[in-house]
Length: 600
Image (cartoon, rainbow, N blue to C red):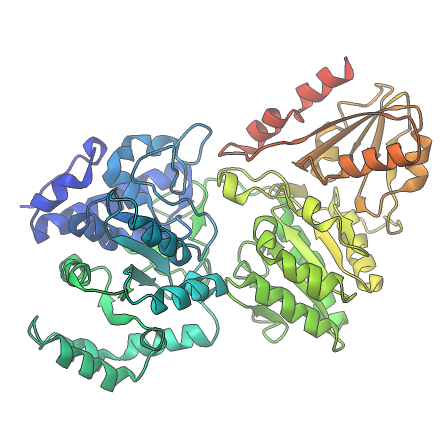
């Protein structure tokens, strides 16, 4: 008879060690049901968490967190870990303000020992934990849990290179291979992983060897696989292992625990396991989801006849340029999120997904520009940060003509501090020759795309994670660096750009308040700035204050003695999980806060 567990009453993983394999299997099934039920209500990362249930339950069965350190790479797959460490009751507020974070969070629980949010950091982090172990007796085994998309990133390989050379140190790397990252994995490394997967002859043969015959097992492994990349780097490599078979996982985890030196356990899991729509997903659409109907798989988010996401709107604008110009569109594993996946079949040779390798995407684009191609790099604002040095040195410094579409720019709901798109302006604006634009509607975006192709320099178009009117009239014209006086300059004036214009434009009608659409953050419209001399100016932005448009206006005002009375509302700290409306209120750029400012 199947044992029923009250998932909400779990306070610690200690009870796992008393369970039989049959009971553990039953628990995994119930955790999977719990995740589906809760994520269908709140939204969240679904497929990755469904596939990783058994492998994380087995981790807590064999190892002793928090003394043994569990480092979850990215961290979006750690829901089972959160459930087993007493947070199931908090899933009702998953990814909500003051609720359960979608990623490991130090302040949430002592078992969350590494915050990530971005990929490929845990192996390097393991090096730090192992060094600290020499002076900190509270550190036991160090276990990295990393996916096949994340392990292809250069940062992960830097960590692998280091740990593999440390013969007297030990990390256990659980390499979770589900053949998907956010979307389908690409590249030569992914092909090599496929080679590991198909060697079923080894999987059958290794089961015939008794526990003690490790040398013979290794000999067979080497015969079947040859010298694989991990063994070459100094690791003991075991796998592929069925990552959804908890009995087999426990056996290999215990084996790795007893070994000396760093070990890689290559587990094969089914992303989306246990939910038919997620299992059938081949493009990553069930990676992160909005609330949905479990029975049909349909999202509860109603599609509007008048609005689409900015990502979809920009993708539709870009599509004709793939026909008109010698262009390539490059994405670091975010084609689905940025809505370019719909064009893959039609433009298979012009759309390039490089996987989770932002730095490579930038350098590749720079080289294309040197050789007669106008590359478009589609990248999330938060991931752009990882590629900054290459944007600086290989694109901007060399004067290369590259168009960057910076998606999820500004305030980003639900994913917390690691995914806010608030730093791109402050790190990009200092680059000489760069053009940074932020449209408030798709008409402006269309003109900016035309200008970007003519610019012959690094041209950045940034846009938020929210809805925009799908209408494009096509009758808008303006030049690079020009701003728009939506309401004429007055004694009190608001300068802002992008979606913020759309949210306040009606509230300021007939208020005798100047409203300026600063659609170009760089270069600034000097003519309008001079007209603001001796006026009161309020600058509103969804970006970090230092290096923002407001700071550049303040600098220009000071250097040119324009005597503007300038006040700004920007981001001043890392922002945690909240809705977009709550985030705006937090930094003081919601409608009511703006009206309060105007009364000062």
